[in-house]
Length: 87
Picture 1: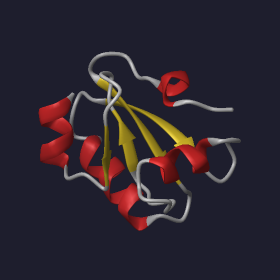
Picture 2: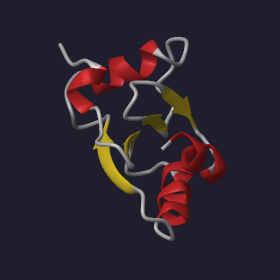
Picture 3: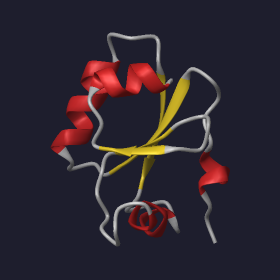
Picture 4: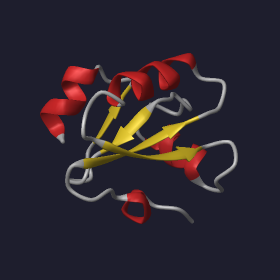
């Protein structure tokens, strides 16, 4: 069974759980492209167990983007400002 610890990013990076069709995911990636923050993107539709992880922190819903930070905390559909503050 997948666990968030399996996807923990390094300091200064994030893991973004997403899908290929998600407009909010594409927007966040585009905004992050202007920063030094590295994105480790995980597609929840093709990576076994990750949809369940996302659901576990979103009241049973597969809401993307869900971002995992190096300290093990998550944020759902965060703004660029929130990501910058927490990296």
